Image 1 (tube, one colour):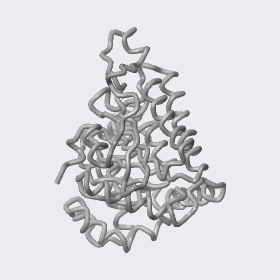
Image 2 (tube, one colour):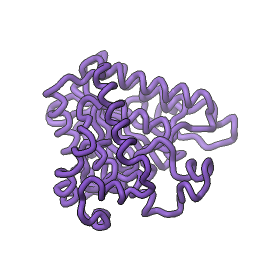
Image 3 (cartoon, helix red, strand yellow):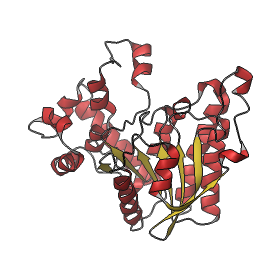
Image 4 (tube, one colour):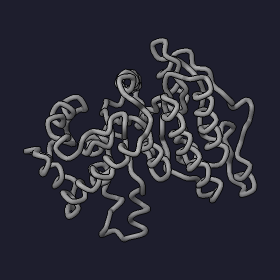
Length: 303
């Protein structure tokens, strides 16, 4: 077993894909033009690895964010590499784009440049889908997937998470700072994972697969998602958006008054919700499968 959580971005993408070829490697020293002006350290790849490889003879364009550099935060160059990768995927009609996201969101050191970069990444994801190419997101790093990158993830066709993964718009510390510890205690790690972790996201239909913390498991999940997307249209339509809005409205109506995720799990019909955190991924999925669709239809390739 090779832990996805403990691996670096290059280890993840190099193991996930066969014959991986990196674009703009560190030797080319394409770095942020802003960080040095603030006397901050730079990374010669600006915290993201992009390139081309294959999965069972399917051409895949992929990116892996390095959470060890500024928490995987997106700046101008970081975002440009992601956008360029996806534009190239459209140009060469790749079979899929796979994004290994591990990010706290926008790099605040780069202010508007970082915000614009994330918005361009979102548009690029939708352009890839419009070209008939599925976008699959893998989340299992220590930083989770928050902020603008959380929105990017939900623009994709499918999301695969591990139990250790987290996905949300605002991070726990941000919520606590803005609204106080009574609203959300970021030091309560169990609460954080119950609220933003892979198991909760899977139960609510926010991710399509939950896997063990293993690069091989993520690789197989990416293959499975590629095959699933091949059976249906991958472009985002107005009807898809309306269905997603309906799902969110229904979720708010049913669970809007709850303050504890286990209350939601109970409402889903799970008899002993306190046991869920103890289950391995496979056992959890077997249990959750009979409950998760009572609240929402899984977005699948139209998320």
